Amino acid sequence: MEMPKASDADKDHLRSVLPHHPEVVIKPMFGNLGAFVNGNMFAGLFGPTIGVKLSKADKETLESSELTVPFGPAERPMGSYTGLPEIWNAEGDGDEARAKAWVEKAFEHVAGLPPKEPKARGRKG
Image 1 (cartoon, rainbow, N blue to C red):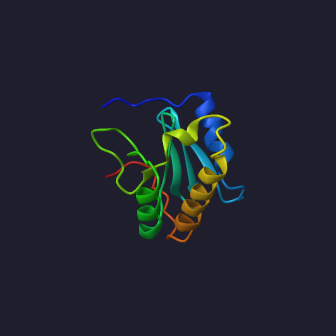
Image 2: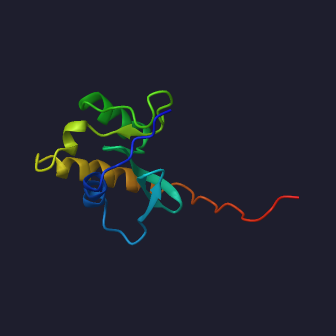
C-alpha cells in the first residue's frame, strides 16, 4: 500500500482552510497532517487530497453535487471520509471558500461527537 506524502504547499493549503477555533489540533500523520477536535479527526491530508468527516446528510449532499474522490489508499479508502474535489487543491482557483465551508461543516459535526478517550500508555501484563 503506497502512502503518498503531502508537500509543504499541500500542508499550507490544509492549514489555510481549517477553522480558526482554539479546539483545533493539527498533528503529523504518516507524512501527512490530520486536524482534530476533542481527539477525533475531522479533516486530514492524504497526499494533496483533503478528506473531511461529515454527517451522513452532508456527506450525501457533497458526494452527489461535486466531483469528490475517495480518501485514503486506493486499496482501503477511509469510508467515513470524503475527499474534496481535486480541483479545489489548485492554488488561486477561487474554490478555497468552498473548501473552507465543507471543512467547517466537518469540524462542527465531529465537535458534536463524544470526545475520544486518550489511549493508556504503559506496558500490559
